[in-house]
Length: 295
Image (cartoon, rainbow, N blue to C red; front, side, top):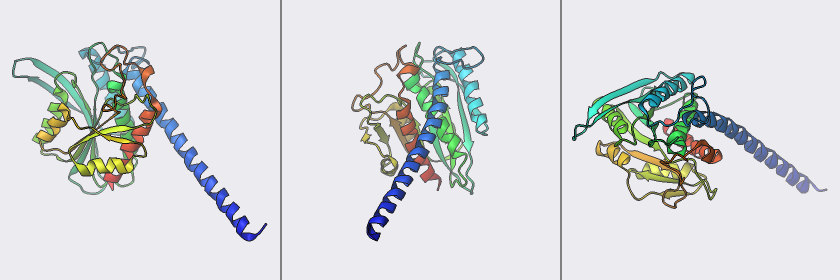
């Protein structure tokens, strides 16, 4: 065997080893991510007990949303964050009363910065729905991303992890949180919102984006190894953000191509319908984007 042939075989073996190592490293990380997210989605949907033997049924009920607030606070504490509450009690123009609680925490920058990046998801559900894909999966994604952001040795921006109440009720929670950011004069770099995540019938792991900013959309496209589709119709939540001058991006499954759970807003939106590998894939994309923003 000549020298060139030996060198070629050696290079092939090195490449194969490096590829296998990278694959196994990702698989281990994916497995850890899925285990964490299964536990969160399970508890938020009543598939698993959320406290002792208590299982919740629907996060549309005031009593169960209070249990969820406690649970979300505990999740934030587990990753060494200090949870805060944005509690509100307001009336709409017709005199209807709304009371609720947004939960959030700040991951501070490691170098002086006045900029904040918000990663958010709503925690309530439609009436009588366990709300797995709408939107327990969004909470699981944001929590895992937060758990990795706190481990970064350097962060050039502050991050806010936010869980909105009452999205299903005229988006009151979202409105109140955005108003608070505006009233407090928080310098928001961008708001990243996750919803309808966890259904992937064609198994292409594609995502859909609705962005107010071409740079934000481009960043997600660069960090995404899967197909990315552009949503052309704005959502009420996105309009709330943009009306107050905040750049925003929403990450969902393929709503445009109808590759989304047919069970949303129903009693059948359960834990067992969630594609956790797809959720992990999207989690990885969001995490990589926020890592870029943290540099």
